[in-house]
Image (cartoon, rainbow, N blue to C red):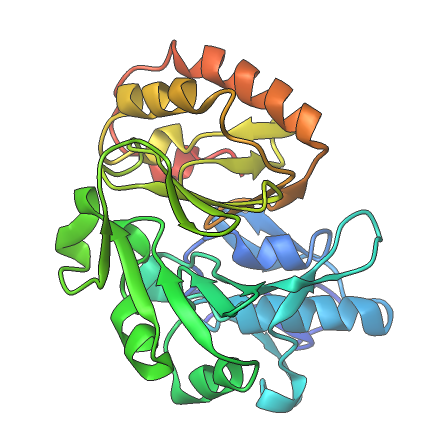
Length: 304
């Protein structure tokens, strides 16, 4: 299997040819892993323990297990997940955990656990394994598994059954999770629990949903993300499966009632911003989206 170690450090850290260019690894190890020739590559060796930990996080998140150290192995002992969110060097927020262990069956999407007064919410899912399920169960009861859309539904029923949780999906994507326990309908926001609001957001898929917690955290699935290329909030216009016009309409409809600080997508970078900045960027994005027209799906055109 072809490897791409950094020149001069043969066999230290490498990325093999299974890489699907999902961008997950580059989010955890910026400056260490970059996109080269349509997939990730380790571009320099790590310096110190912090960068070694970054590469371990990238390796444990990688859905194809393409990132490997030459010596040793990826083990539960060096698995850093779940990871608490933090921004700008600030204190980590232990109420929202990034799960890593992204799944090939969800195209390498990120998933999250969120602490609530009566237990944890899982938003989308990592790959399924008994070891991971036991790790999440040990944190406390998981009451709900919330699916943002059909592309991320692969392991929803498994985790819901294993953890004794309720599975939620929107009717527009119900065929991807036909045995869901709760089905969201229409386009109006739905209060799921105190401080937990589902915002139906058709566009990327017919049943896409944003989940907003306490007007702080927005779990956006594949509807919105932070692009390192543009330095802004963007839509996945080149991989819109349902309707880019509907996505523009969803964004316009949400203005004024969608408030948050953390943008937490399935694909693309996570970003913290003051709520006022979020509003400004969403209004500008809505104007840009009004000009978008349907185009063939093109994964290579995503502006990571």
